[in-house]
Image (tube, rainbow, N blue to C red):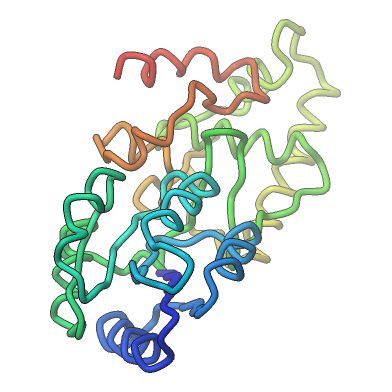
Length: 261
């Protein structure tokens, strides 16, 4: 689980970081006393939640929250402050939590349990983005594929949400409108090998489920924006901008699932 924390008071920043580590020992934290530095950092990395002070000198935490969500729409925002009067304004911008200083470990666990239920071990899940372009992340960085079709094959499996995909079906979708021939089947084996190797190198091989003459994805191992959308997650619903897997024409068949909401 990855957290961004911003507070211009060094002691408060340290106390919050210690409370987060106590609550989620395996978490990764990016801590900043400067809001502009936090904004620059989120352009290069993604986070599960941001813990923000509200009163930070010339920068208001409410404004910072809006800027962060512009850069990462599915980011959970939890305000940490000494000022109770900001609660109404915080929830107007769809904050998902509000903690009063000093923050205790139990307070953090309570807020995270509201978001993720009893299982807050999201560091074990692979983050996938399908809204606004397809990406799968390793250590907060998009995974790189040598062949675009290898990446597209993975996107297709994720679009199936755990349903099996045969090699014949994959050929029919990836080479839409073209008759399936030997060259396509041969190239499919090549991109399948590359996709598996890329996932294996990133430590993600277990997201694939191998079945007889078919392949599927394990949805339980993914932290995916479109999956969360379909589960009714308000943050994911709010992040949808009619842009599900826009690079792939075959994804149009799934768009209706999101347009109904």
